[in-house]
Amino acid sequence: MRLSLLAASGQGRQAESFQRSLRYFNLYRLVVAALFLFAVLVYDLVPAVDAASPERFMRICAVYLLLAAAILFIPQRRVLGFNWILTAGVMVDIICFTLMMHLSGGVRSGFAYMLLVALAGAGIVGQGRMTLFHAAMATLAVLTEQSWRVLTDIGEALEFFQAGVMSLGFFATAITARLLASRVIANEELARRQGEELAAQLHINQRVIRDMQDGVLVVDKDGNVRQHNPQAAVLFGVAGQDLTRLVQFSSSLQERFSIWYGAARECSELLRTAEGQRLLRVRFLPPGERGNALLYIEDMALLQAQAQQIKLAALGRLAANMAHEIRNPLSSISHAAELLAEEHGDATHARLTRIIGDNTQRLDRIVNEVLELGRRDRAAPEVIRLNEFCALLVEELSLNHPGLQQVVAMQLEPDLLIRFDRGHLHRVLSNLLTNALRYSSGQPGAIRLVAQPLPGGALELHVIDDGAGISEALRAQIFEPFFTTRTGGTGLGLYIARELCEANGASLELRDNDPGAHFCIYAQGIS
Image: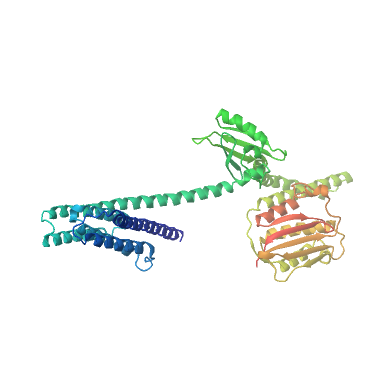
């Protein structure tokens, strides 16, 4: 579809080019007719053949002017079309110049050369379908005029030779003009296509540079900013300003640029913004042929965050592998502790055995949670009816936490749907509800499970308790791995819950205390 639109657009521009050339050709005809009439009226420049010739010549010039004006100004192209208008104009030229030639002494008068100009113009302006026809009509007119002169004893038979040579010139001129016009049209079409491709490429380059996370500056030797993308202004904290000088971005950058430009070699340095909020890495590329240098601006905080993500991913894989390796000896230790517990011994023996058992169970929970985190990428989202899922979940958790069904107050619409991995959603809500139960008052309705549909099919699932809430000092660390305020906790519950939400295209965030802890899952629903 896009190619067809481009082709139609190209054909439209080509047709407009032909019409513009035709207008110029018609304007030339009008100017020539006006000059001939002016010469007759003012200077009487007519070689009289007989007493009636000047008056007839003037009439022909006047008719020629009127016809030229009609062809130029009357909007006939809507009815006749391009080729018909061109042919009509050439026929007017042939008839009028032939009559002028007849009244001025025949082929020797020089008016036949005006026909050469007309044929050359028609060959260049036209599209080639009528070129030889125009030459044939001009030849027929000249030979007819010469025959009339010979039959009426006005001319000589030897003038047929000159008329014949002139006729050959008509065909040669028409063919040559057409070949030149074909070359011009081909070159124009090639230039048009190349221009479109260049414009498209420039548009793509502008979009790429505009959407880059790095800033780009094109600077001349005097520190004038020729081009820059929006990200460059954002990184230096000067977005929304009219930026034409490098010093407007950063005075220290202007000083370093003068040194870099003089060195004329590629270099890279770290630079802190004027507010000291960002540390930027500036890469300087020396000027090319036009004397403009390139500056690439990179946010070191973003680079460090990317490096941290890579590091965390590598540590995650390492932790998953270690968890697999730890599980086997941990099972042996747990089994040995159970055997020791069966033996009857003193209180110290029992206490040590219990310590071993408790810690092996804690290590086993950590291993299981690490392994669960390693399976976050294997999400299989499905459409879940939220009220039924939450009701079954609360009923299941009540087996280990009696009274939970009375503590949790669910505010869920009956037909609310969510797209989520069933196992992941079970793990996330189980963690949030057990945490809420641990810190709530335990009274009926102390925990609220609220679903709020949003425009566009999204929804928010809130888990709110009436406990003391989370202090401001701990809010920034609540989702960090291995951070816990509870003795015996692993510190991985909320971290894994957030990771599982992200694996399903959702997010888990901590809202302001309401009055207790308030967690919100933002997920894509089914509208």
